[in-house]
Image (cartoon, rainbow, N blue to C red):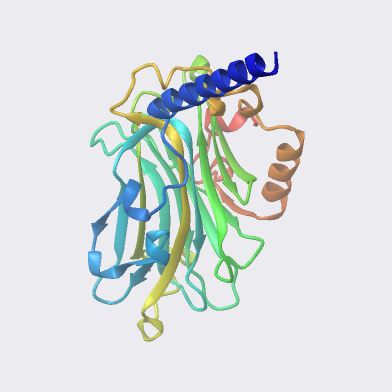
Length: 294
């Protein structure tokens, strides 16, 4: 009896393992062992340095060049996150960006994190933006409530059929809901790649361009590690993106829970410094997607 149970148990374990393998074939693995497993350098290879055997990287900006990298694959729905340590000290005029982009010319979809440099002692701002079906201009800015240059912090984008959620250390700072039923665009047809760049943007990045980059402080460094991609790769199994069993499509991820909603409201009340929804010069009529809460 004991022997029979042992055989059945082992067979079940093997079956579960094989199911797991099949699942991983359609859903991309999380946390690659090295940077080059899932990413490639797209701009200025000499300014990107691999660290810790490729588990982390250093990005460099100087007067000669910035730099950037991108995922080797595109994804349709899922979750992507990275731990980033931003430029310390006087970083005015610099932008460190982490974003998803469909890389299509006319009808672009894009989900942006842009970290805007500051003068020493001033708060770091993170700007988010959403492009859906080619329409963007949905900028929001939040002052981070910690020093993002002192240590690594986790920045993530959750993207499913219900909404897009931008989070910092698991605290949601922005939600863009799927309101297609109301005739509003939502990115759901085009797979997107994952990109990051470090570059000079002192014509707008800090106080609207009033604060210029101080090249005497160069070179500027930003650090990345713990790259985590979980999503449906494209090209890949066509049924993956529409599979309701994907964890990011589950009930617990279709809207913010009570704790996440409370954190979201705390950020919006205490740390938001710009919202296109309330900018009457740009939008005399409140954009319809701004009327629907979270």
